[in-house]
Image (cartoon, rainbow, N blue to C red):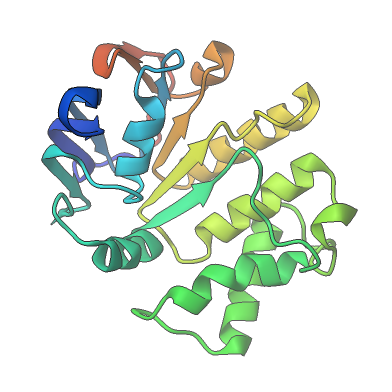
Amino acid sequence: MMDSRKIIQTVDITKVFGVGDVRVAALKGVSIEIHAGEFIAIMGPSGSGKSTLMHILGCLSKPTSGQYILDGDDVSNMDKIQLAGIRNKKIGFVFQAYNLLARTNALRNVTLPLLYNHANPKTVEEGDEKAKAMLELVGLADRMDHQPQELSGGQQQRVAIARALINDPVLVIADEPTGNLDSHSGVEIMNLLHKLHAQGTTIVMVTHNSTIATHTQRTIHLIDGMVDNIVHNGKKVHA
């Protein structure tokens, strides 16, 4: 459900790595806006800056210059502790490699972010109930006690999506969410992301796959650290 509220607004974001004569500009003045309820893809070849931009949007690093406003909060100059708090409260991550804890069942993997949510603490019982609801949402109600090695790749990614949703984030960032999956599992994961989008979830997906990108409403193309163009994919905005 898209509304006029801006979840992401960047103004002339730059990111420079290195010092002195060995400085490399990974981002060179990136300005984008993403509204609540949008489903957006970020694409670009290797070295385009898409991973650097994802890290900044996900509050995993800070820009060298420019401004980043996340859901009304200017996070541009926050320190690591402040960024960690914002990240846990407002952002859910879905990674290509799932990043699940081995020898830990699906339920406990999903409840993990709750341990760091000091702004809205839950009892163990409340956390378990929320995690069960998230696993039901992603179609894994019968796999709660299974460990990652007992699950298929698609099922592991579903657990990762449930974990990303546990703290009711304002933004889900998916980094190559189908990259480790076969085509059938990839379709299932994209269908799940569409379902979440239809329910109002704001999703930013980083991908190198142009076919996957067309599932979104807009594709932001980066080249050499700059926005090259923005393609509207003609997907319906859910109202």
